[in-house]
Amino acid sequence: MAQQSFISFHDLTPDGSYLYATPSVQQVLGYHPSEMVGRSAYDFFFPAEIPACKALHLETISLQKVAVVTTLRMRHRAGHFVKASIVSNLISGCIVATREMTSQEVHVIEANGVVVSKQWSRHRLQPAPAEPARWADAVAAFSEIRSCLLLDRFTAGLTCVYATASLADVLETPGAPDAIINRSILDWIHPQCRESVMTEVGRAKSMDGICHVRFATIGAVYGGADVEVEVVMQCCSDAILAIVRPFANQV
Image 1 (cartoon, rainbow, N blue to C red):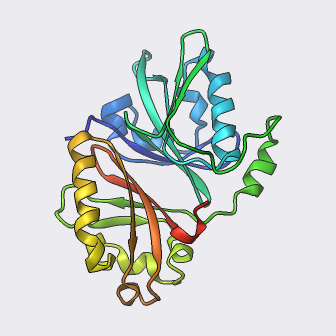
Image 2 (cartoon, rainbow, N blue to C red):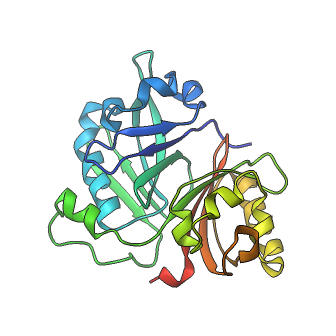
């Protein structure tokens, strides 16, 4: 079982305002989701850590990152601060965040606001800018197609309970998001790929971690053509979050 966690969606403004938070946020931070939606992400961070958080936030967008962990303090509704590890994922139209302990890249914000970083990824999607990019420019430069799925981790076939609209672009089929909701992800994974995908997912679930998989789809399931996709799956306490992109987009 994963540690208690929650999933949230944030807009692409500098405030990173909450668009949605799963109900489990109440167990983690004491807030009802409705108390967070529409508020800036920075309303819940420790004041001394906010400048570092903003710099990492911009970097996530500027360098188009997925599965980046930042360890920081978040404000509990009762008034105290709790240590949290937030995984940030840039997708088409928003940032999706989860709480997790395993990733390719980790940033720890110390009490004095200094960022201590450790990066395992072999390369970045693009070179780091010499100077911080302007926010609007960073958002406008993001053109890669990425979608987000929420999978029921308690079903054997990982039933899809939510998909962002951009899945239609990933799978090149307008009706794809609606077609896969309430269906097992196995229904549209090519039979030759199913065993290897589920093996990796099983390992990630056992470690409450992250896995990277690549597989061919069965287009007939969602009314389109077969495509090849790359997926990063993150195991949370109430769902598995899957970031999906066309494999052809990988650089």
